[in-house]
Length: 179
Image (cartoon, rainbow, N blue to C red; front, side, top):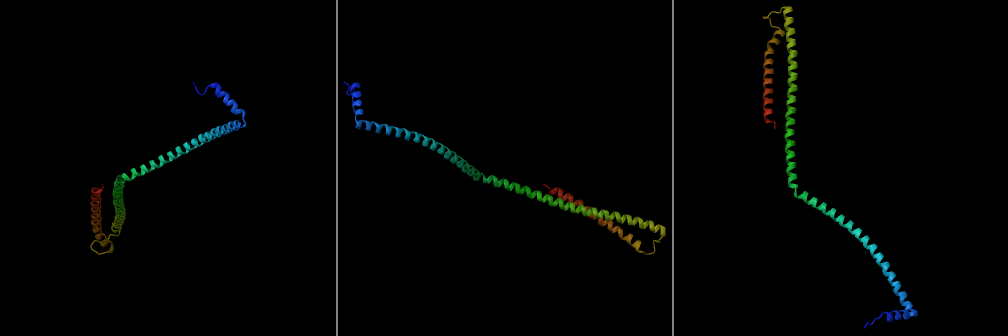
């Protein structure tokens, strides 16, 4: 036999509801149910907000962790960077030496050009002096400034030839040393 039969329960509920105490009790339960529903809805809204914030926090933590991992990787590979920097510095040193050698060679070539230009002028003056000597018919035995200047010029030719040999030696030694 069922203790709570449908007839008894319906009659009991109707009797309780007809009393003021039952009515207050029912009103109280309805208020509590409404409050539970409101709290449930607010709880759901706050849970969604918390979930969103936790997702953002997780993303931020992941980004920070990735940055820490990149820094860790960089620090672990610092030996390779140091090696690459040393290689680059060695190449820069070679390039600097090459530039300095090139600058020295250019300076020497500029000086040789000046010497060659001066020698050309000296040859022109000699030719003009010879032409003047033939016109004036200067005697070879009589000492003059012009003939003494002409006799001292072979030394200049020897000096120019020595400078040319020195330049060739300089350039050939620099070519052997270039990387």
